Image (cartoon, rainbow, N blue to C red; front, side):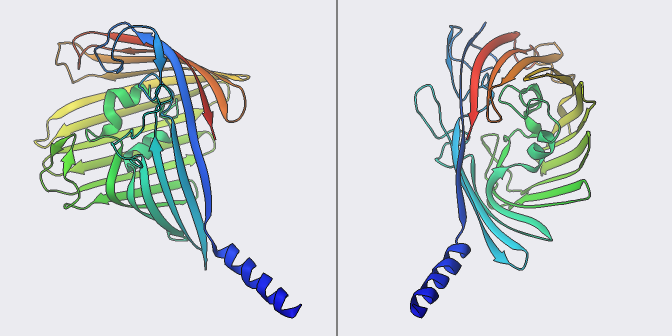
Length: 328
């Protein structure tokens, strides 16, 4: 009996030290159309169709694994692997071209903050996500207009990232070593590393943040934004700028929007205008109208209208979608 109790105690101790692993994900599918197949909305034709993991979806369907282990002494180790897929045809490998291209990282966390290494969303992306009204949906006009202030996209590979938060304030700093920063927007980089910095504040109804990122001799981006929740309405505004390696502003402008909750419904209007990029002699204005209806805490129906203005493209392009999203 004594040996049995000892064995059970050893088993319990070993089980407690194992990492706690969670399977999670998103399923998102919609129907809709665009009036032109060109432009930034991203459909191959202008016919009514099923839409999945596209710019007219609320989100990209995905599955992921995340886990944590209590190391004792206030330390925790964790990991995150995440891959994307399309509910239209079952194809995968979105957001970078590999199975876990959405996220592949591990971290250690304690009283000092969190230190992460691997592939993850950028510091600037998380800064914008803290106040952006759609929750950085695929159809976010802040994202489509300013690209989350990075021509290389909203994710970094081989990044070393540090995050901390205290008393409502937060800060983040990330760095991609020179030897790993081999591509910038699909073009071989200059052999320079990338760094990305942000500071923010979130307490009560107020959220505000400032982010800056740069690849030497390639590009730099800055964004300042915030939101305030009045209860009956939540408003958000931002200013963004992207410069090339020579210091010339390629994109610069602002966003302004509001969300109104009405029971299970939430209605959002958001506008983002690029006042500098005028390849086709027009100030580029993107507009979003969104309605969401919560079926539960994890599932909602959404309807969206998006207008991608001319400026970066020759013509205005508009599209609509009616979709369903489930988070698990």
